[in-house]
Amino acid sequence: MIVIVLLIAISLTIAILFLGAFIWSLKSGQYDDMDGPSVRMLFEGKKKD
Image 1 (tube, one colour):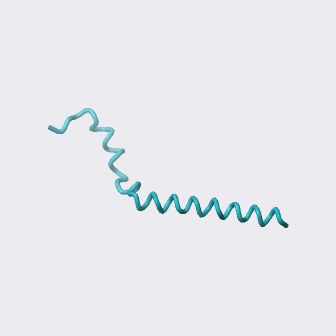
Image 2 (cartoon, one colour):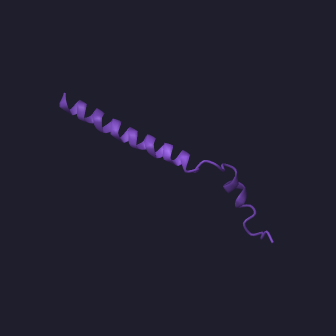
Image 3 (cartoon, rainbow, N blue to C red):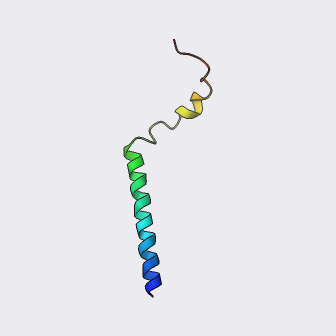
């Protein structure tokens, strides 16, 4: 019984850490530009002067 409680506590801690990392990535702007990187590789050689 102690093992089940310990595993549930560890899994909840890991889930909360991953949720915090996801919320942090949303607030820091990691998902702002979804189309830019796929198009940017096509025009990398051209200069914008």
